[in-house]
Image (cartoon, rainbow, N blue to C red):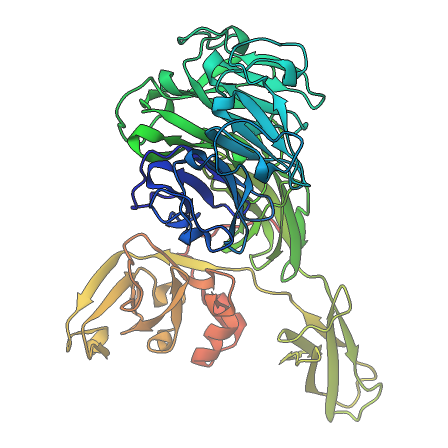
Length: 629
């Protein structure tokens, strides 16, 4: 939520809104404040001057007097327990404020009639119910009251006589003592902070009341056991949790306590009462008058630490996670495959809204898990044919620990076929026009590939055009040859790669040079890298000033002279190059076309044919062979 720099003064209640905003009853400032998800804070009701005014106008122009409670409404807007005005006030989504319960005089009266004509007596809290209903902790009247959607008010718990009685019977016939908070539960029931009785009481949807925490005596005891046997010390606030349990602000014990759905109680924040000691381990931090509390998504909660004039948030420790994989484990080079993974926490529940990355070679794609914990991404296959590690990674967040999974993924070459067309008869020694069409397994024509045509001892290479068509003219066999065999072949894409390592990185001053006779001379300060590869390894000397190598996924030019055992490259524009970096002379360092240098490119730069480049690679070069497809 961030740490807003604005000051609070004895905050008493917090309430999360649907948009991620947290509302705060800034009680001694006589305002309601809103804290946005980015940590910024603004006033949304009250002028800061205690009093009563402003109904039917902007809430920020209205006067409040010791507002102890606030409750966000599902459709926008909020309710205020304007305690010393003995009213409940409503602020609509457009910012207009009105009184919806209570009148100008304190006391008790009005049940069965309009809530705006009823009397309240220092209402400390308000809770939004289903529809347009709401509940009021009518504190000094020792009652909990309900306002229906039509505006009628009634008592739902308490007789008005402060005391303790009635468990197991109708809540309206039971005694409660100065209730300071009320909260709704998912099943339609409610929870009451029965502060004067040192208990939390629950009322079922049918109206039966019972004690669910506290044994009625002041003190601190019972953690790890039944909540009904534990001691509380002025439990001022209560909040239902999504798992069927609830949270208690055990104010004078300086603790927040959690009661599970099964009824056991534990401390989840606070080591006792004490001055604010900064952020850190929630159980090791003293609290200073914890008041209003609210459950947040993912098991977190926020509460008003009133005497330290702060709102604090406690987040649970991250849960362990696991990634399951249930999609393609192979694909064809150049195609795109759909990948998916499911992210679960330790209990097997899906983890939504989490960013997951898939990495194959140099390609990384990202996806976000949905409500079912599944992330789906499309991965283009640009790595070399063969089996590679597909790494799936979740980096973790405040809710969940990181998780990784590695899958063996096979990239297969595209299967192709060549269809040859040639005239059935030609005159001996004349031109023999031939055409070949290259298609992949799906029948799609393949462009930009070299097809070799052969008749007798003659061989001609031609590159397929945009229609997958390669054309050439051979020479028909001489007279006396009755028939001749004409063939067209595609040898496939070259998977061969050649690499080395940087052995030194040096600086050149302007005017200094490298290579035989300073073939390259720097016109400005330059940085060069020295690579142990030269013409004794089969590299053509004409690559100097024409060719490139790949370092860190970037093309860098060969400068100076290609000597017997060394070449130099200009890395001025490539930061961080250091000895040991891989240098790709033939092959790829990424997914983009410019991140590949193949034999055809190298041959074209020096006026050779691709096969000559490959055949020149010397025996000094260490060979590593991989299995054929």
